[in-house]
Amino acid sequence: MNNEQTNNTQDPDMDGNEQEAELTVEDVIAKLEREITELKDSRLRAVADLQNTARRGVENEARARTQGIMGVARGVVPVLDQFELALAQKGLTAEQAAEGLKLLQSELWKSLARVGVEMIEPNLGDTFEPGKHEAVLQQAVEGIAAGAVSMKLQNGYRIGDTVLRPAKVAIQPNA
Image 1 (cartoon, rainbow, N blue to C red):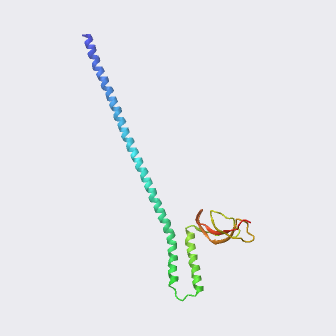
Image 2: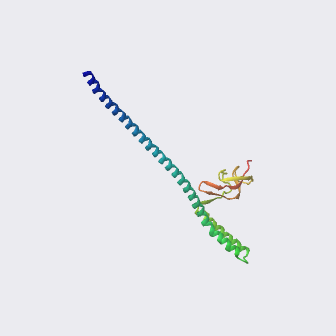
Image 3: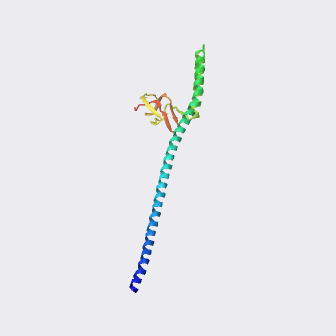
C-alpha cells in the first residue's frame, strides 16, 4: 500500500503541476494575443494619422495656391477697373490716351511688384545668360563682344529665381 499511496500522492501533484503549466501557457497566449491586438490597433492609428496628414497637406497646398492667385487678382482688378474708366472716356486726344496708358501700366507694375514679379531688362553688351535670355537672332553691332547681347527685343519677367518668361534678345555674332 505504501507504493499505492506514493503513486496516488504523486499523481495529484503532477496533475497540479500540469494544470499550473497549462494556465501559464494560456496566460502567455492571452497576453500575446492582447499585445497583437494592441499592435494592430496602433498600426491602424498610425496609418490613419499618415492618411490625415497627407490629406491636410493636399488641402493646405490647394488653399495656398488659391490665396496666391487671389493676391494677384486683387492687385489686377483695380487696374481693370481703370481700363474700363479709360475706355469709357470720349473725345481724348492721342496725348491724353497715351498718358492714361502710362498710368495704367504703372499701376499694373505696382500690382505685380507686390507679388514679387521683377522685369529682366538686358542691356547692350550684357553677357548672354541662357536662363534669363532667349536668343532669337544674331545682330552685328559695333563695339559689342561676340556672343553678348546686341539688341533687346522684349523684356523678360521673373519671380525670385524663377523665370516666367526670358527676355528676347539678339546676340553679337562671332567674327
